[in-house]
Length: 340
Ligand code: SF4
Image (cartoon, rainbow, N blue to C red):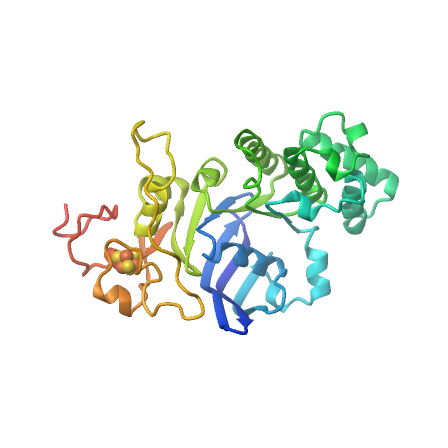
């Protein structure tokens, strides 16, 4: 067992809007070890991005972490002031977003933006910071970094801008990098290059990673552990192998059927999950997936299921895993009496 870097305990985040309290995250608990890469997967509205914004302390009004604890290096981030959080961000925890153009300032050169991040968090002068900025651009694979450091964001392609964002994020050697849909805006070949880069840098710099995405294919290669979120809750958590090859939650199974897989024969039909995510102003009393699940039972509508640990490191919230669940032909991956 590695050293624990992040420990999120029963975190609940809501947005207090004019239509009511939107319960975006409704009690999630998970941990992250040093040097580990964790994928958080789910559709939009599942609560995955709100989870990361809550950890970063970047929630804007009317959003609020209303309950729970977020321990980072054994200190509860929910107790930190906004100034303390500002110092932690960019120094110990960094984040990259989907669209680098919205995060990069168009009126400053790429180099100036990296230098600013370095000078803010490290005890170096601008000259040293410029040398470091060039080194970072080289590290993330920008060609001719000595020249490119003086380019403006519009002179970079989409893939290069995301590389520059990664350079800024990693310039202070953070302990944790949160990447929220980092490849969604990029075309497929560039996507693969950026994911490869994130993987490489994780190993080189020993940075822990949380990779947030709606695309299971994106986490497959980078993350050793995966959390599947739906309706503001964690539906399933396991190693990448467990989630991909032994999924136990109908939502995970649905997600897997909706993405192309290399390990399935050529005639694989992609099946979308019918229906829409639940209204989080009035979340369902029972399982949040009950309106879309092909196996919904009476109890699913009435009571939210607890987690069943199918292995010590593999859990899912589904009544089908309960020892008294009736026989179904769904392969939950769990052997129960009477079920072959
Ligand atoms: Fe489906 Fe019920 Fe399991 Fe929810 S608890 S995923 S509705 S079977």
